[in-house]
Image (cartoon, rainbow, N blue to C red):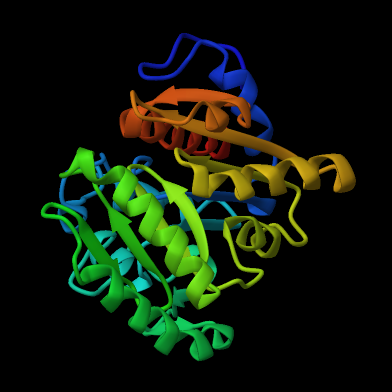
Length: 281
């Protein structure tokens, strides 16, 4: 499976790096971030959409692989809306949609299931979001997401120092933890929930796993892949989805680097094509 012509959108070594994921798809996990990975980064977060065909591609992959999941900092309901391939929410019951870094997920019936540990933090986050919104400079978006609040300054680049200082103050005041992102800082409850813990749960009992991500919030997922590879012998592939804004730490943590959501789509398409071809032999 590692041989053959070059695949458009993929580095030349991609088939060799990805091949272990196709050895036994029925025991392999495919997980990916949303923003910057499946969907291009946009000025207004609410306008984000995955590349055309992405939801349908994930649904096809779910027919071949043990687990296919979208693991994002977005609310689970947002993911269900954006990843829809039919009249109902979401790409189908077999594609797992996990939001807010694992704090909530979409059940097969389309309802959102929150992690019970976040409930005591909801009033704290709401009060913090209100304080941040009060006096925020023009162009700064304070995005309240239930158990987390993110401050974005993409449309107000000059406000980065304000946002960093204010979120640092609010973290000290509220007990929330500050997590930097793409021209943003997010405050989250100090819980053992992140993309790494999600990957740990998804890969239990599996033989191979892949995670595609582009931002600092994806580093725990890459770290968990590395840990499972060393300690448990899991065949793992971390794919960094790079653009001009990407932090170098993300590429450094990955086994394969592709360019933008188009590169991530090419990875997923290669996996779907390769496993479908193998199944017909």
